[in-house]
Image (cartoon, rainbow, N blue to C red):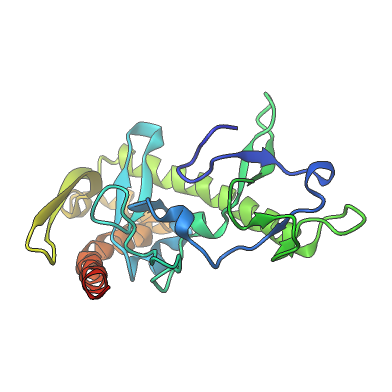
Length: 247
């Protein structure tokens, strides 16, 4: 399988025959995400993510995706340190499930759990958590990751329903953000969408009630509140610049 989903380079279906000796060291090194300036989100994450990152929408039509902004420039992630640690309180689920992912396994649309064997944490030296025991049975770790990835897939479907509803109600508008960087330069972030608070306020009562009952109204409010988190990214940029200067 070729590179997909931004960070996956060689995602292959997991099997006891091919991967009986594999182990995974996960959640300690995020350098695989160092070139991402935004990370996809699902609706269940909006409340926690909105407390730390601006949440925007990118893409068009059915491909519209909510994402947490984690960098001010292309190929820049201000939340990944030089040592590979995550500099933040909340790590998006998209990164926490890595190197696992579901992919279409056949023409009927069935999914198979895959692993990116290009991930540095994948090894046959027994470092981390094994996928299978000596008898070829799933370990508790693999079962947990299968459940986590299944839950993520279900949330992905709910998120698609949310973004479809935003498009149906014509609530999204193009947006840009301008920031002054520590070196005195200014940068403009564009190419993303946000919910228009004016359009939201002008919805009829039936549409607002529907958003409330589906839980989408709270998700929208979290998104709107998150747009005030840009100064947090600037603070990270200032810290990184100071560290680079000291080094």
